[in-house]
Every structure is written in C-alpha cells, then in structure tokens.
Image 1 (spheres, rainbow, N blue to C red):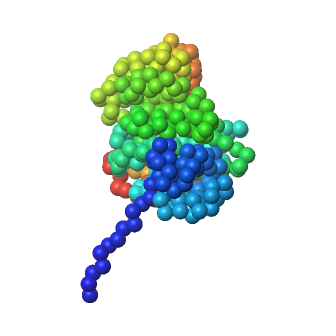
Image 2: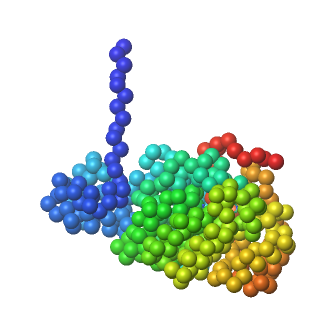
Image 3: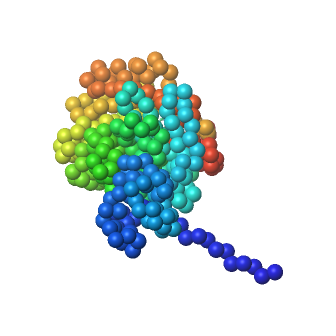
Length: 362
Ligand code: SAH
C-alpha cells in the first residue's frame, strides 16, 4: 500500500506573538478597520480574559469565524493545575512546542502575586535547585512570558487582579532580559495588566553587565540577587556561575543599580543546614552587607528529591536572622507557600517529566 505523506498542520501564530504592527497588517487583509480590530483583540485578550475569538462579542461575526484559521488568541495553555492547602495555585503551562514551564499564583491578604518562568529549564546549574537539573532547553519568547500572567490572572475571580509579579520561576531572567522586559512593559502598561512596576521583582544569580542594563532600562523594577553565601569559595561551590563573576563584582553592580534607580536591593540567601547557615556565615554576611542599602530575604531550603541538602531547623533560622539584625542588616524569612504541591521552582515540572538527576545524591 502506498504510504501517505505525513501532513503536519502549520501552527497559527498567537495574537500577542505577532505584536501590534504585524497583527494590524494581518487584520488589514480581513477587515476594513484593522486599527480598531487590533486594539479590540488585544483588549479582549489582555483585559477581557478572552481565550476564544467567538467570545469577542464586539467583533463582526464574520471576522470572528475567520480568525481561528489565521491566529490563536493564546499560544500557551494550562496542562495541569493544583491548589495547595494555603490556596497557592501551581500551574504547569504547556507551550506551543509542547515544552512545559511552571507558573505559581499566591494569595496573601490583598496581594495576588504571580511567579513566572523565563526559560525552559535553567542553565545556571545551582546545586540546590530543581529547575536546572536537566539544563536549559530554550529561552521563552516575550509573549510566552506574558501569557503565563494572563493564564494565572484568568484563574482569579473577575473582581480580582494581579498586584505583584516575581520573576523567580524557572530560568535565569538576566539570560533572557530583552524578552522579559518586553513582556513586563505590557504587564505594567495601563493598556495591558496595569501592574505597578514597583511591584515587579526580578531575581537573578547576579550577572553584573545585565544588572547595569536593567538599571539603565529606566524601569523601576525591584531587583533581588541570589547571594546564598558570604564568600566566593562557598558561593562557587553552590552556584557554579560565581566562578566567572565573584561576589565583589555583583555587589558593585547592585550599588550602581541603587544609585540609578533609587531602589533598595534584596539579597536572597537560601539556608542549607550545616553548609551556609553557621554563626560564622551569618557574621561574614552581616559584615559584607552592613552599611549597604540592602535587605536580606532568608529562604529555608525547600527539599528537592535527589539533592543532598537539608533544611535547617527553625531555631537555626531565627539565630541567623538575629545575627544579621545585630549588624543592622534588615532581614526577613520567606514564608513557605504551597509546600504540599511541590511549589518550589522546577519541582512540579520535574515530577511530570521525571528527567534523571544530574547532581550527585550524596
Ligand atoms: N535564576 C534566578 C531566579 C529563579 S530561582 C535566581 O537564581 O535568582 C528563585 C529563587 O529560588 C532563587 O533565589 C533560588 O536560588 C531559590 N531556590 C532555588 N531552588 C530552591 C530550593 N530548593 N529551596 C529554596 N530556594 C530555592
């Protein structure tokens, strides 16, 4: 029997993937008022929570029926969602090429915070992190970063909106800064999601050149640096990227960031029992940061299957914090959210895709 050729349907582009100008030119072949139609479409997707063209009630019926042949409203979808006892909602987001990333929606008083990913996997190789275990597959495109926010927002009741964004999901944001900034510019625009730039936190391993680029972008985003150790030998052991950079260059870039933006920098410090949570570590960290415009956010290690680290007990965490405060370095301990649903970054995806662990388990 003759073999039939394999026909693969071309995947239609997403409305936000095209961008405003290309969307207008596509619509100009379908409707006489492309400028208005492009604006209507974008408003439906960004603000009206529409995920289907048929729901866009003020578009002409004929256009609504042709659009699905040319475009998709969103390129990403929720492949899996789970809700923790504290309400934290974790979404496994499927991209058009079937890769998956994680997005988390958190509730705290009036705050609605979404944690977004910037890459499929991560190339930084931090030894305590689930996201980097299988390396990085690719950068997310700007519309894929934005669509995570839209899909998370669509989970909220109609009366609620996203108030805060933390770029602390999978991936290293500074390795994909241009796409991230493009997505955030729509997220923070009144025509987009209207989120205040001051409520957006970008967390990084610390890439000095990129920190300066962010400072010069003119946007008032909050910067968080994953420091995790007070001196280079230990930091390089935990975070291999430190071998190239070193703590000093990161602190200098952070100082420059503060001068340019007036925004205090947060230093994240994961607490790994017996590794970087000792009294001497707290003292060195206090010495390193005293006198700087800095806040330290202590993150007790979230256990990851197959990784050799331990979470310190509550007493050790409290002692570490007090040592910092003695040196007048302000510090807080991150609340654990969604612990019962693998909400630590990279864990849910790992559970679904189960790649082999790269790190030694002893
Ligand atoms: N690549 C960026 C952002 C993603 S990770 C960065 O490194 O900052 C966000 C934060 O979670 C980082 O501070 C990271 O070090 C921390 N983190 C990663 N794995 C963790 C784990 N198992 N437990 C606690 N914090 C973790």
